[in-house]
Image (cartoon, rainbow, N blue to C red; front, side, top):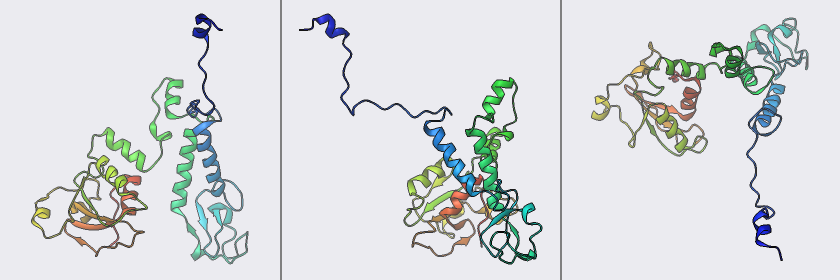
Amino acid sequence: MPDNRQRRNRQPRVRSGNEPRSAPAMEPDGRGAWAHSRAALDRLEKLLRCSRCANILREPVCLGGCEHIFCSNCVSDCIGTGCPVCYTPAWIQDVKINRQLDSMIQLCSKLRNLLHDNKLSGVKACLRRKVCEQEEKYEIPEGPHRSRLNREQLLPKLFDGCYFYLGGSFKHHPKDNLIKLVTAGGGQILSRKPKPDSDVTQTINTVAYHARPDSDQRFCTQYIIYEDLSNYHPERVRQGKVWKAPSSWFIDCVMSFELLPLDS
């Protein structure tokens, strides 16, 4: 029989299957969450390569008659002849630069700076060089950049002065998530659907700070938000201070940190 001293020194046993799992590695050492993120970025970049030179696209263009995408310089000799891959006729009036795809490529470049060791992150660069580096060299452009400047200058939040009523069902963009985004952006949630001619609407005198100053949208303070993909489509409302808007517009505003124009 083991004595009490042996019992005290004995390590406690952990039953098979009950041993706690270690947290995923967050350092870029080839494992864990960082590795998954890098792998996902690599897969995405494979889709963003020119169909002719196989490099990451620069000023991506489509020739109109097919689905192949090229760098603008790679197809300068193909205009008036045909696609160099499938030989579909290509005419100059059909050539278009894909601006959205170009923005996505720039975003991928910024993400690669954050995820890979071969390029320093902004924080690491400051620590290594012992000087303050410019954030623009390392941060994600467009929305995040504008958001940082807005915070530094102590300007109003994105949805400051705006009220939102969420109408209908929301599946693609869950209503709870939209409410959190409204609150984080300084907006307020309405429990009742606003009416353009109501006394309550007329007493709200706020102005949307982040709307374009030359647009009548800056006077709109109440939005009726509906989900584009649902069967609920309220009647068109664009009167005075009350406008109707799809949830995809709301998400785009958050991504770009700007009250984007609404289609008439």
